[in-house]
Image (cartoon, rainbow, N blue to C red; front, side):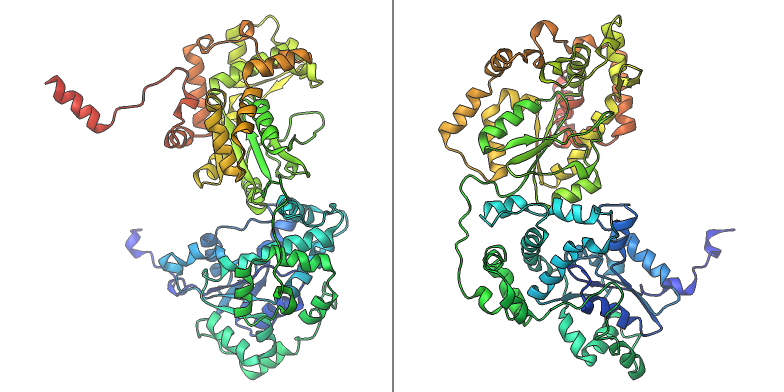
Length: 578
């Protein structure tokens, strides 16, 4: 049948019937729970309560901080609500997340309102929400673990706030909640309508007006529906408990540490926005506070992901000397390490995280949540494979108590055979190696944060041959200046000969490949390059293009390859030859 005869169902040509109500979480706050139930008192409205926030808690399709892309989710809602006059999601998204949706012509008129709450009352519910494990059943702790991992512990320590342990949920959750109150600065310009939930709860006409706006004037609450909505106003719902939410009473009950933390963590700019919403913060803002940082502390956690055999220990030593922090890597049992597991990422006090992590959307969400300073270290893929072969076949880490076990697998194999196996991967009773594919995926996984300006990408050659410039870039990223004398000391201490001598004196010199055991790239055969090219096409097809854009296309080169001439250069060459 010709396409011209295919007719779209009439209701699908209608304007999108979706609305969004944004807020900084539900947290079993009765007012936030009441609002979507009140909307649902009209039979032609379907309002969801924190739908996507709940999905991530239980179904684990994505990290707790992630949400589906708004365009397909909006179309999903529109389809789901086909039998209703309006359908909307309440609280799954934050105000700052809807800008991209509203910038698209088809969705620009979708009604969006941001519900606000008195910051002191909001904080009370947030801390209780964390302390009760987000209403998860006993034994399930992933959501709370996520809150702990994304909390800005390094910044709290930097400000000199009272210390705590992971079990002191009331303390660290208070700090994190206060820090999140500053997000109002991003919300204020993201959407046009900001309404206090307290006003909606106390003024039925304000609720009726808002419901009319959210449904684009299609639905007006009659008095019976309005009475039904407000009949639930003071009724606790399942999962809620009676909580003191009067800001005045809460502020009077705060201990001194909490008042001091609020004054340090909530910016004056955020305070002004809350006051513009009509919220009175009384004595919390009447006295200025000294927020001079603790000397020698880094504001943000440091996350390092490096390719194996790319200079990991060298970078760790540089960071240790620069910051005074120790490297931390996760402990795992037997078997292959799970480099993609975001829950292995953590930043114990006095440490920076350093491992061979492959980033996923979940780990990116975690790193963004805790506002980590990200450093990625890569190396030419052929050099990595050569060095890794030496590492596995000679069991060089045995000297530091980390034997790979099974190095005899490579006995009686030629160098050519061994390199073929390093590219393709293999498994045996002695050893398993996954090949070049995971290494290529790891490099590719780093580039989202690099391309968005949220990470520093270093290649091994820069680190080894231009240490001063690389160190200056690291210090700039960390916002942590050092005196020239300290920089010179770090460079001298991490020179190859100096590090090799320290390893030799401690019996660990095999960890650094000696010249007599080093393999060169000419050990590879032409077909090895073809195998690598296939591995790139299968595992990271956009990697060559992305590396080229960053000026690091040499990472995939077997030999030094000249960059292709520009069209002007080609034309100039032809003209010269005429």
